[in-house]
Length: 252
Image 1: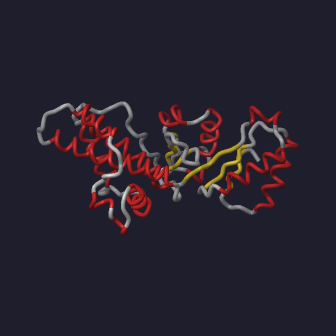
Image 2: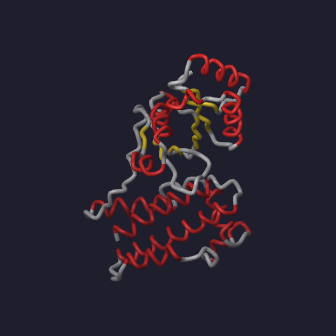
Image 3: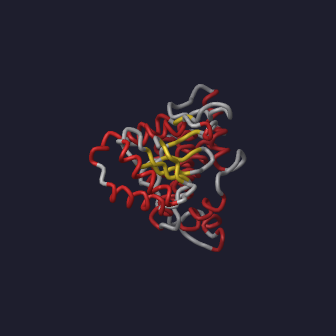
């Protein structure tokens, strides 16, 4: 039961991340629908285990991993008058973050139950920071899915008072178009690596800023920590002309 509960939680998180950030991309919506199916199968396996049904849950989860999304639960697939993978992922986007009584809440409840029984796994979610505490990084996800420069920038953002109480998590592949997401579902796309400041091409950097902003994330983080004063001045002058409130300035 612990194994199935942990699998359900993992697939639920991946489904939410992929579906929420798909923005109409068919490939990512298809990936989201597969995670949704795997989550449902894992929940069913956990329920069967809880009621005393015996069997090899590991094999069942592997079967779920291999299942295609095409035949996904007709009652769910036809939601919103759409069919197939697009429907499932799309409904996930419309629903937003499920509350404690939604899919993720039920999975989380099962995982808490298995942990109390002594069957918890090592991939527990990082406890949410208290409202008056600095934001926290989900270290396992950043260790697995983030580049060193992204992790350092996330730590600098987490230390800022306006992000108190938040938890940052780095998304798994495929690349969803952002570097981390917080517990409110807000996405952050970071740029700037002070260790490579000597290679800065100002024209290319300006173009990169515009490119990052066009992704449409909640926040674009520009980190100029470690850059030369003249480089910082030039970038600041350009950012000032943009008048974009989604930019988070770090180091300038």
